[in-house]
Length: 283
Image 1 (spheres, rainbow, N blue to C red):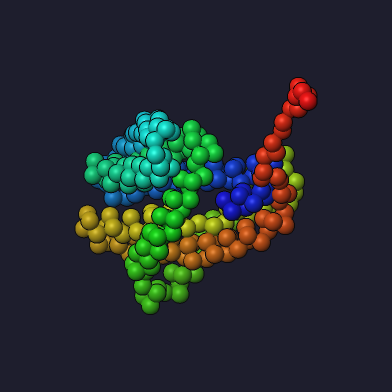
Image 2: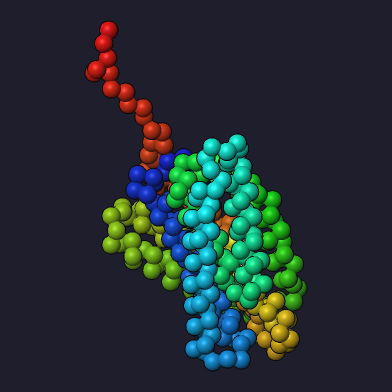
């Protein structure tokens, strides 16, 4: 999607920006909802207390993200040497510290919200200067991405999977994707987009990978930490669904976006023309 944006596809109507922003909100909802139900399953307290605890974590994550985002907007200052590299290093350091710190203080889910809000606040201030920072962060992500998905793969034993389990997981995944695509297309019917653009936006919600790779193993990890062997089987099913979601939707969704994007979206001018007023020039 970012590659389409760089090449100018759909930028006149803001389609790539819309999808990236909506994806961020979707990540927040997924992280919050997952941690809420995870607390309900593994906690001995009441459902109300678990829901309130999850809402507290959301509030803390957003608040800390806003504070850290305001800080990073002005530090390091623009007049410093190699400010792009320093900002990229600071963003990565603060995001990692936020995730580890929230885990230490038992604020599950807050770390992910901090990183999202922090990055949003920083990008809003940096404007066009964020392009260089994005490249550094993207290169860093390319290094650590195989580690993330590799850890998920090591926890899934393909030989131990039963055909019934795989069938149920694929059916669940297919039903969820169908509802997701239909709901997106229905909502886009009220927006000022062409029919083909509505189809593209709906299909763009197919790929799921990063959040699933992060959240998938948490249930099994929690079951082992609290010594609840009777819940490990269900936790493995959760991770299997996450594994299949990554395996099925990520490559196919990326392929659809890469093929349909240039054919459906209108290409805008990514260059900004330089206008010079010569009416007041004297010979």
